[in-house]
Amino acid sequence: GEDVEQSLFLSVREGDSSVINCTYTDSSSTYLYWYKQEPGAGLQLLTYIFSNMDMKQDQRLTVLLNKKDKHLSLRIADTQTGDSAIYFCAESYTDKLIFGTGTRLQVFP
Amino acid sequence: GAVVSQHPSWVICKSGTSVKIECRSLDFQATTMFWYRQFPKQSLMLMATSNEGSKATYEQGVEKDKFLINHASLTLSTLTVTSAHPEDSSFYICSARDIRGQGIEQFFGPGTRLTVL
Image (cartoon, rainbow over all chains, first blue to last red; front, side):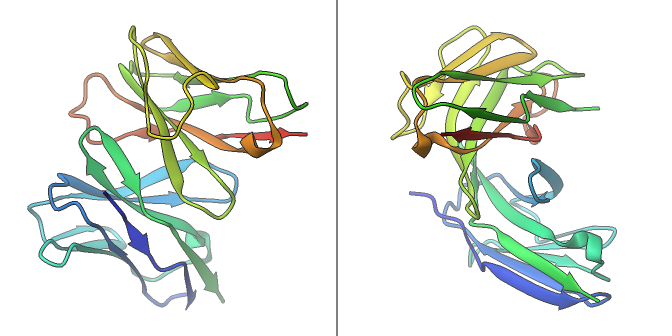
């Protein structure tokens, strides 16, 4: 089966970097994604990475992929209070997305 | 662009009634839409894949007679929760894939919160 695991909670100080980790099981995933969900809202795609890439950077976001260990991470530089949300990683599995358990990021001043 | 809407955004109903939730792609056409369910503080669980003009494909453990899905056009899919019970209370989210795209991205609606009394 496919399982995507994340740590449940992360607390960081405003201005610091946040690193959210994810492990997945399906080595045949073509794309891996990071989504952000604010309270009571749907999901916003932050970024995605193709499985043959090791790293992707997009402004404050850096995605690292270790395909050998099936480990994905999202680094948010200069974390702001507006970044407080739940972050989900997801892997593509056939035609579907399999979501991780979600990491709640809390940013304090 | 790539906006997906859901209606209603929240609904409260009595046990035993049916509730219809609409998912619309506003500025693109979607041959495929997905329906997810999210319990409080949990992840999204895929319920079914909805294909325009054909029957939906349900995930294991999802009752197709209870969660009726209709994808009658390239911009609209509906989910009907029949004979709702309190355990059906949840946050229902749809997503849509652009017919023109490579299928990389699913665009998500804002979700519908269902409370069954």
